[in-house]
Length: 290
Length: 242
Image 1: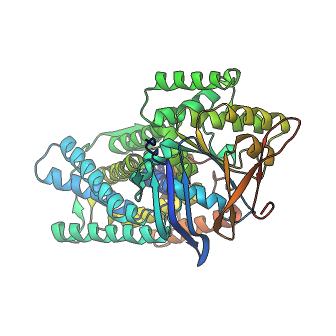
Image 2: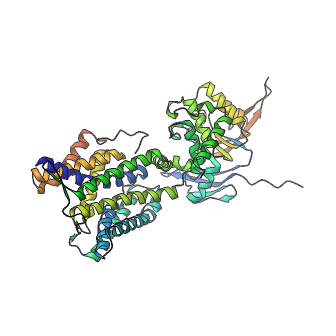
Image 3: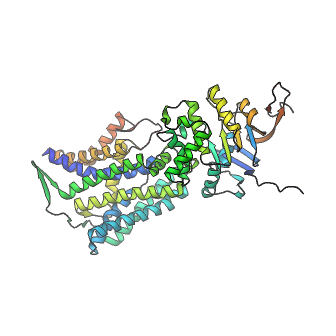
């Protein structure tokens, strides 16, 4: 049933959306393609799994996973971004990729390479609407993802810190000349994007009930694709791109077959970039970002 | 007994800046004392903007020493204080204006310096009133004219109470009315200034001394006082009067 697949696609898309927004915060504000984000996504899922497995209540396990992702992201800022800031943007990109590999391998050592089964927290609580079956975990994930993005959008437009972030997005130099303390703002941005990525990882674990040290790679690339499809630097573009890629992925698995899923998703990316190089909601270079 | 010499606000010592193998500044030394209003003149591409950027840490020199407000400055953390005390007026006003209304834009600097929102807004209103611009306070920033935007930018940096103003082509693309207004305001301020400009009238009015950038080097320029019907200062550069 196509409508069921669309619902499933929206659920998956909401995960991509959060990862894409995490990438957007990094590239839109700091001009930094932060490849530790897939690692932080994985860390969210794996650390939550580790916490639950240790017997912690799921809320504590999730909070611990988020805190850990935030701390690791601070280390990325300190070790991969800060020393290379102001130089070629490719340099911190490569060093952040190093963090992705490091995190994957640490998890590999701790949990092994097999997929681990994440316990069902909201088992057998499906909502039936017409012919559609919507898992409560899926619904909660979608609602939480959308609420997070709406809150972030409000935060950036209506608060003084948000205004500072937008100033940095326009020009880091202007920001420092207007007295913005970059040494305090940039780490907070890293924590923010880590929390988004790790939340996506936890939601993925809860919805698909599986985690693995390499779960971040596929989702990370889809997140980057979603950001580009939506329009680099646009939060709502990342939302649209994430949902679109989620739906295309699920529909192509359902209608064509799982072995062509990457061809469909990345073919869509290519097609959109040919027709609209700035992405669906991106604009030609201008002053406005975020 | 001589009075002790004041600590210079800004001192550059043997500053060299290279970009892509080309020397943009070549062993430049300069001192800005409290009360100085220094004109920096010279052809386009001579390194004038780079000179200003180096003073506030936006351009890292390949050699030489930057001292500001009594201390040598090396790291970005060092320069944060310098940028608050030596405020840079942007060439393009649109680069500085981000907020919906003028009063919010003028309050943005004080907010970033740690003032609470209501105190920052009050500071902005006081600054606008001091400059005779209080009528612009509630206006939408993006709908201001180019000249009004420049004046609002000036209000924005003055609201941070800097000791030094770094003015990079302050009259660029302003009409005569706004040039006059800006000049009047700047002349009435009790601030040290470095004025990079090609606009002789504003330099004549503001500058107390002048230097010239040429081929990445700094050389002295001469201020002359001419017997006119009205007396004013002229900046003469290079070999014009040598």
